[in-house]
Image (cartoon, rainbow, N blue to C red):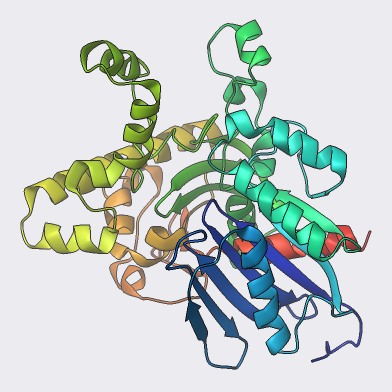
Length: 404
């Protein structure tokens, strides 16, 4: 397979998690996806690899894949079977999603030994994510040591926050010594969606103030003024902010002390409670919004309360970020829940007409994979649904850096 322009223009995007590797191979001459895949349950006997080449049927196989090295080699084998092997001269770079870049990494960065060491130093503030990202980087570098490897950081878009938004009101020396501040996450998605929303309005990003609601199993909000993030809901870790699938979001910090003193819970037990047993699943036993809405429609009171808590928190952030921005030109929903749940979008904006926010019921009910406006004609604030595409954003940033 050759690119239409006859020049090397392929980028492999890797998202290495603790027990999974997601990958996409893109041809940047036209932003064409040549293949996508997922290796999950790494280290288990039931490991699964699912691979889908462009224009061809999906392939799947199961069986133990011991580690990330084997996972990436298995993915490379699937790509090679489609004539898209990692040894192709048309592959110009590999882009890696890295969750935490701290304050040092404010833009895509070519990975060197020094860069990798700094990502390792950030593990204490991203213990669930950075170690897996590092494993993926090391494996990819071993497979193609001659190829530029680029780190694209989830936190980078949020580094434009002013100090008064990024700092917590705790002792400055303690905060600085332990890198405690609001970093924010999902930045690649927020950057992509804010820019696409401006395009949907036919305006330059620098002209548009946007509230972005990234609502998936993990959820975050951001206030974007003229294309630059000025506030975001996630903080030192992805736990702060909105109610999520399994995370509590905002909570009185003293709850953790109380659980230690009264319930005898350890720090690790509280960590698991707030990150994995809270949010929607803690409130009603489900973290799938489709199932929660089905239960709500059947009169389930626990599900209804969970939904109401979820929506109440959303409204608080919409109101807060309207105040932070002063002028809001657009509010946009993205990610799995944001893109697909009309009831969430309707409920989140109900009663906010005084803010210029409303949805047109018929437009809101439309299911589409395309960016679209769902606000009524003449609305003071445009309300949009814009499907996120973090892999494409990572690929674009990687390709641009590799060609500098």
